[in-house]
Image (cartoon, rainbow, N blue to C red; front, side, top):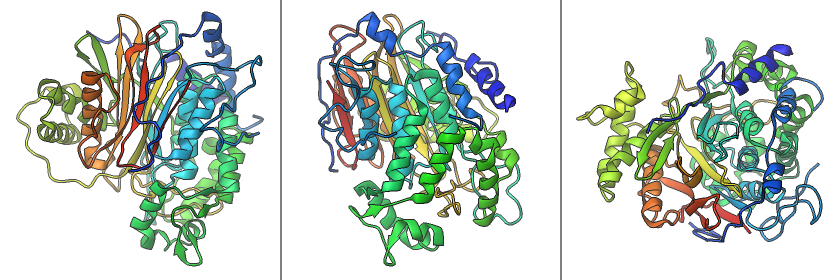
Length: 524
């Protein structure tokens, strides 16, 4: 399928989306705020951690239906399961950090870092693992958005942050029989684009990790068990969901085995036939048929035309640094910048910051205005209360100072609540049927010295934008990641380097929200 390759090559060159230019001037926390010293990599080891244009082109070929196994992540907490000393890809010293809402996904990301992968490799591993271990908030049927940053001026985005947008889209026509309208899935293509631009590992290997977890099964995490308990009644009304998420007629609880053989088979098909098979191959045709069976019909043309995009992040100055936020349609980033503006002047006025965030987002969603104009509009009325969909977030950092901050969603807890028959993944809810979630993430860097300082990603529905803004402000004020928890109902994941990275004196730490059930893990 030459058309698929042409489209993705144009993406890489920045011809069918906005390519950033220079901006104008509760329980399961293992290592919240740890501070290992960063060992600066040598130029020779740095070269091992970058993918060149030829490597990107080779990676893009896996989008096509055609040709394209696993190390256990369960032992990653204490050991380096990457290549042995003296072998290509072996990494010693400071590796970076990973923070997410679900522990097993953090271990998968850490595994990528220990094998010499970049922050993007770790982020993709986290995202694909969440599709298996945290399907209430992330999955093959959903999508999300990420901010990626590499400090090297010769890197993909020339040392500037870049937004990778793959929010779930509404189909062109939901159909008369759509009693549960489904979104067009974009997560797989979005993560593939992120990895093709910024990674150096094999995308197939990350899919294989997720595939084996789905096939062998994983214990239900506390985070997933909580979500299952909230919606067990309507979720188990779907026979396919009941087969996955229940045992002996009762919804799965924490520690019980979650096995997803159909999802494993779908991941295997993506691995062997290529990412493009999900969008313009045999798998796409199967999705077309399966989606109609669950009342959320998607057309083959919807899938074929679904492409992730690159975009300018929203950027503002903060003292000597710059702060980037996710841009619309991930307008939780817009809300995060609005809240950040308030907190930069009044660090303790979180009530005013949250009100401003929601008012700016509501004005932008009303239409007829740009994000920049919405931020500049004052005296906005308080919006009507809105029940925003759930999301999940994570942040990664590698030893070079590359960082990725992402927010993923199913546009509703467990999406439409119906699993695609024979495919094993939940359909996300169509944004035409529910309000879009407030996907929120931000990243701080110094443009003068080309170095990373901090990144945060948030969840918590209406509280997500404030969570990101408050986490970043407090981190910048104290040089420690999330020195105090963000205000309810928001939750945040944070990584920070108080003296920047790269740099000989760089010191970095990571923290997940102490009220959540995730994990913050670094390696040195």
